[in-house]
Length: 261
Image 1 (cartoon, rainbow, N blue to C red):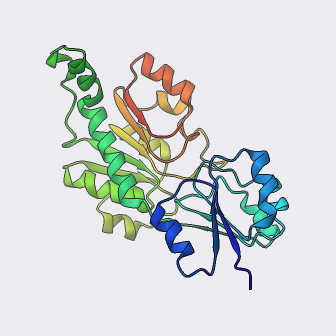
Image 2 (image 1 turned 90 degrees about the horizontal axis):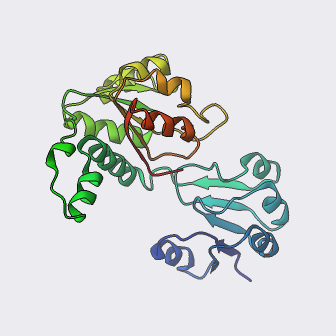
């Protein structure tokens, strides 16, 4: 019997590839950086498709994948997969929500420290053979308010680290219960605008949907505290980047660290 064929279309860990191919029950083919047309051309021969965030699994790809039974996203969200089209065609869509939780939370916290202490700017200055300490004093995290938008796995892990640094954490998440908020030792706000008005630092941890696109738009950015610092390790599109650039230029927003665009 010919084993089902699996296409790995984005770079994943070699350990993951080895696990898929381990007992020979699957035929694994790794072909990354495919163009949309190349993917359409080869997808009919595969029963499963593994992607990360680069490959877009569109309705056309799903339609062309006559043998396709499952799409696996090696990551948290599935916004690069047309889930509605997959459902119509009976294709199961899976993701790995816990796969990079701690790594992403730690990364977000490292960016939080960077925007607080001006570490990248200080590093660049010293590499330029300057020693200008007074311009890189920064601010302490202690006793500051961190506003977390989206308290899923990553937002919760970030909150734990912020509390350990003596920060007050407030959160906006319409799906988070008051009981869970108390367990996490955070304050839950009913409206996003309440968080925006109070936070010294804001970190975003929501998927990108029609409702969350440009969640931080020009109007909301102007309602933040002057000198607010913003972190986004979640998704591009959550912040209106033109509005953010303007807010940075007029120094209403003191700093921003974006891992996604």
